[in-house]
Length: 318
Image (cartoon, rainbow, N blue to C red; front, side, top):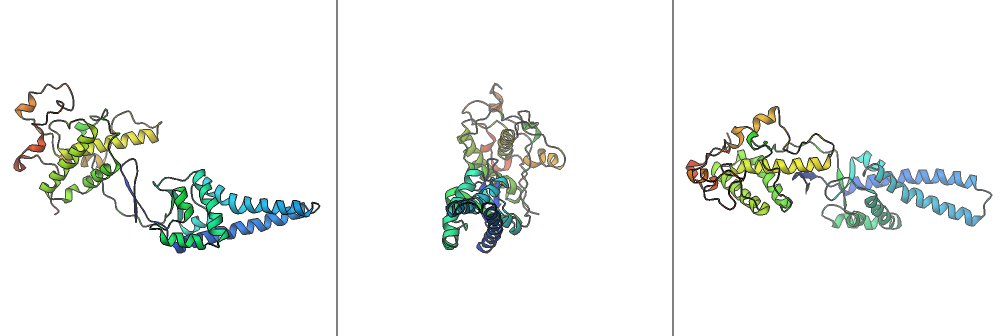
């Protein structure tokens, strides 16, 4: 299984295609291309019988390049990685990040495929696929692509409860540009499994992830917010920004997307705990910023004793 991370901090479990299925797809594509080449060549030769031998040879070479090289490139570009053979075998060519391929990816794969598949009868492609950990041939390596299986059993993915409603839109001005993809993935994996953890272990993990996130953003966490709720709210803000960037004409209004139905119930106070009541020292800080005083973390809930910590929804398995 190949795990990729998207900009929305979602891990894509893509299953690379095995060599037999890829070889079968290539054979089907070659069979279709050869049949089309023979039919078109016969028609062209019959239509250009009056031309000399040199002109007919030039036309044959042009038909060969057009149908056996340009044809697969055009098909993969227009179908976003699904040729006839791959469609029959349930395969697809994707980028290394899981996105659909473009013309330049198909062009590199097609040109290198002439050498490693047509000229060497597939020997180079087979050796490269056996050596590669993800079964990639040289064309995939140079193009930055991967052939994956599309027909795979659906697996249950962890559900990330949305943050409490009282945190909606609170982090719309937070700078998230310095947060690496690895930290986003760690936060998402923690939120999907936090209710399976021991309460003390879960709280410690949430504190550590929140501290890492604060260090990357340069802005202290708000006073009185449980670390798990803080992580969920920032992650939702990240996903909302990516969704607005991808769907610029959508209905996103600058804040976190609204939640309704079953998801809203999961994101209520019971999922991450109610807001932590600030201590006397924290109450003395004037509410000039939604994130509290800059650098003042003496009264943050992360330093509370274990017995006095608020409920964050970390319950041991039943």
